[in-house]
Length: 116
Image (tube, rainbow, N blue to C red; front, side):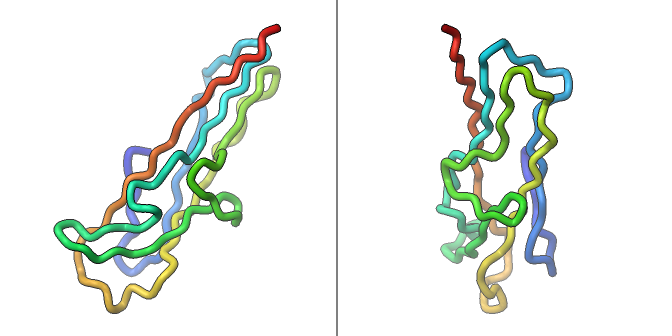
């Protein structure tokens, strides 16, 4: 998704990563979607300020780190179900400065071909 928000009063939100239903994959190919990186090392940063709020990303209750695979599709298999990721704040935010906090997550799509 282009963006997700954790609403005021909430401590988490979810996002869905999916492969379009009309996608095709050549024989012997594998498509992977990876959580490449977080611009602020998994911290939301206050716009026009220096305060940060730590958060974690998980899939099916398992924590994800930069470089982890979120979704994989191999030729000959059905397109996989979407991956539901949870972003959850991991620190007390009561003493934080009010305002808009943001971070940028980068996902990569990797196509591996094993034609012999």
